[in-house]
Amino acid sequence: MESKGGYGAPPAYADSMQPPSYQGNAGPQPYPAGPPMGSPGMSVPQYPAQPANPPVVLQTVYVQPAQTFSFQPIQTTCRSCNQVVITRITHSPGALTWISCGGLCLIGCAFGCCLIPFCVDGLQDVEHICPNCGVHLGSCKRL
Image (tube, rainbow, N blue to C red; front, side):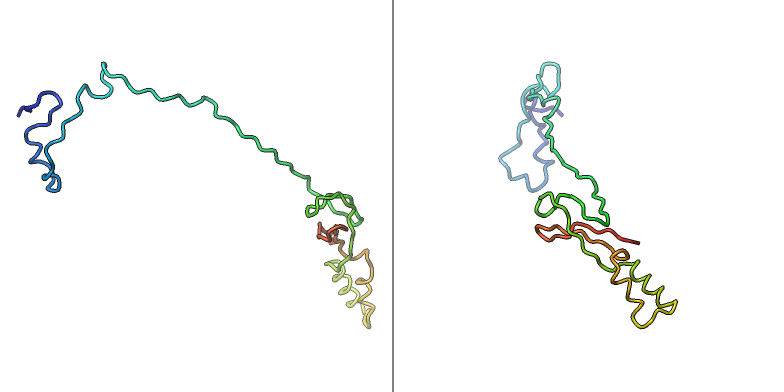
């Protein structure tokens, strides 16, 4: 079969091959005039070139070294109030305190003598507290 309209015109049988919902349209739609895209006579549209190296955004991150808490007050920066402080320490019963208490009970120190480790600071854990805002900064375990 040969088309009636020349180059770019739809074939004559195009109306009969369309789905039923399209048959009521005004008629066949013409193909775009001119040679197909990419042929030797056609120029391809040029778009603005992207920059070869996109801008780099730098963020500065300050990492504080891990703080090692000891059994004595230390100088540190409080993470709550951002002040350089010398910590206030408190003693609290820990694993060594309870093991010492149990050991004293096993060897016969009953009648309250087994509670002596709860009075000795050298057998208890140490907690470091900020003297300005009272935030718990860290602790040092005896065992």
